[in-house]
Figure 1 (cartoon, rainbow over the protein chains, first blue to last red):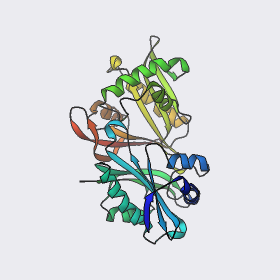
Figure 2 (cartoon, each protein chain N blue to C red):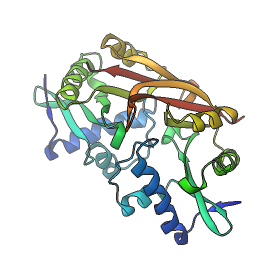
Figure 3 (cartoon, rainbow over the protein chains, first blue to last red):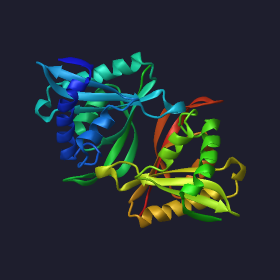
Figure 4 (cartoon, rainbow over the protein chains, first blue to last red):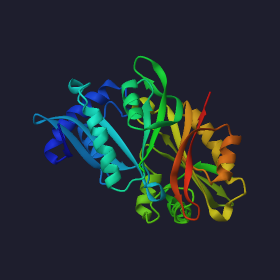
Length: 161
Length: 161
């Protein structure tokens, strides 16, 4: 598996993953009717670095890394990860997360924050905890899960010493 | 004091307040070099309701109310408040906050969340706590204060039953 900066040639593959994940509506608070154009504009914003994980020439995951706030909050990064549903449980998320920690350090960020980790997404939470993230906040009922109704959302944080 | 939806005629007054507050760099994580155009685009986004507090015909404060997340997170509102430095400690913030709670309820939001309350901004934190907000998260060193260095930031949350 190779992880590298995304190029324009990856846009179709990224949109395919994005669309599948957002349509499932069980991990991200995006508008499920978000268009291809809106999704790619968000994933390729000017302040955002976009990466893909490639395996046997196919894009199996993508992630973004950006400042979580501007100005006096820009030393804390934010990241978001998406793994193609067909490639789940193959370690793609972990590889991208490790790559992300190293990129964030390299770019001089002092910490990484996830603003919105849905509490039912236990495999992601388990991975973040293994990688040194801590739950630093709980947002009561902040996510409307398609099957479980209103569930809590975690804010997770990891310093990069 | 009257609180009402902002109009295009308020843009100059809003920019004046915004610019003063962002230049001080001690409460908000905006880029202090943010242009008038960028600031007003942010304050008047399509998904955002913008209000002003007016006293004797002068705009003395402004606030915005919007969904904090899209899709399955859009039942939680986010708000941001700015009081003209010359009108501080006159109850403008409290009046806007009460107005905001009532507007958020009226629009059907189930809760309000503040993502980034700088821990040294004790008068704001005191006001939010009086109005029923609770600190639900602490982001270690997430704000670089111009005098105090890296300080913690709170996530605050209030249900709207």
